[in-house]
Image (cartoon, rainbow, N blue to C red):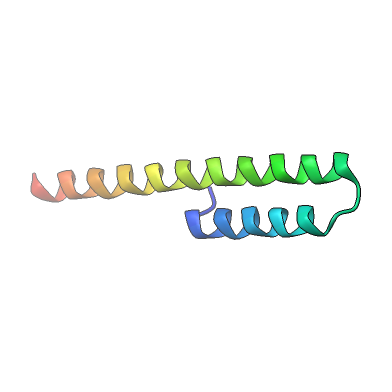
Length: 61
């Protein structure tokens, strides 16, 4: 899975492309893709926090 920083960078790129796009339908699709990348960034943060907590719990045993 990609990390949150990479996902947010892709989201920003999709939003940039949507802003530069003349076709309304394509801009809408690009914004939808950006929203999905932002969701993936949230999931990546959750995954990283879960792994960090698991490693910390393992170190305490």
